[in-house]
Length: 490
Image (cartoon, rainbow, N blue to C red; front, top):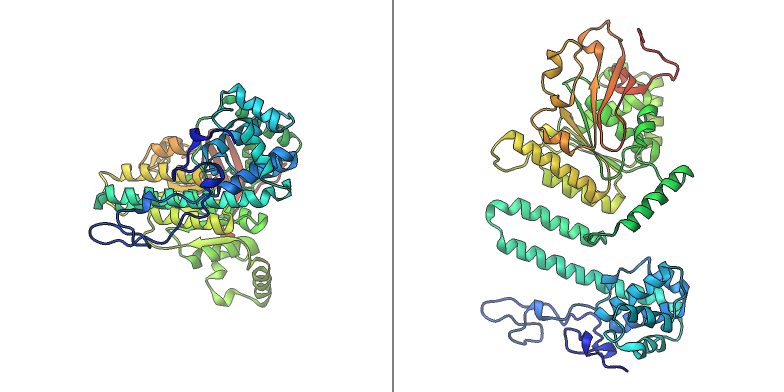
């Protein structure tokens, strides 16, 4: 075997001799003075121990990939370059993937040539080491088994890294930062458990290729759309609520913003089986459930609050609705004084356990930070920015309901504008989409009764528009207007 001193592992061994299955000799015992490990060796700290890895498994994976193109395709779906512990194995893996991505054949000679181009062949141990990788496995059939071992060890190393970061943050923080540290710790654990790696910069070429691939899939109706809102024209313009977007639904009190937010959640969870959660800081679970039942069954909301109005026919309708919807993936949380940290933690957990697809928060100005701030405007700005980051982290649309100031009342037409967003201009900046709810008959009962304008005042990735919907206050929902409907005077 060629000299391999260029790539020594942390325990001073190289190649197969450096194999370490687990690297966990036992839990450390902490006390005053020197730290001792489970064997009682004085002066060895937790951080001096060799991280979990298995060099034999890494060699077997690479050997299988050098023997079989099918193995390359399978393993590349499971392993990242950083999953390999040995640096020379990372370099060899990258060379194999480079050839594979270029639709070129892969074998020892071609990989050696690829490594030589970049001046890495001698660093990985030369062609002799590549031959030893092939010799380390009798068949490529077990490549995925070895890949799983490599991946599991990488996960354990990520656990150690996350734990080390959390410990360092805890030691360096002051008491006033405790809540922020808890959130950062949760974020570290979520990223690690979700198998995410912080992305580095990337070349434009692959990004353009992915963009064109998405466009091609859209034309062929192969690309999964966003979360359907349930409204024909809105979905036509937005292609649904998109992952990573922050969507603001704003309006004056009693205008119907909560109703629209619940309509979005109903469409996603009850009609498209997409896991959704509504954080209600204004209404109780029972009130929310009553609105959902009224909207789905067309039983007036007022009747839901008067037992004598529930006729036998309505009971049958309610029972049928219950049978149909009892397992729907819709979650409701009406915890009082909910902090942003609680919302983030619950969303992360639901993403892991139920593949969360939509978050609705009713409403932004009722959220609490749980700490002293200079101004309410600064606090709401922090909420807005944090919700946008949450949407990107979980890759789900986050719908934040928001109050408007009294600006619309000061205008003759009473129509809301972006500048009316209450307490923070940063809401407008952070939002990808802003819907402003306007009902003319709220101000004048004779002005287009039963109609509502949903004004898309901001659309980061497309045109703005105004959508004409019907507002059914009795059953607490919005509905599409007939396609041939014409507004009076239009």
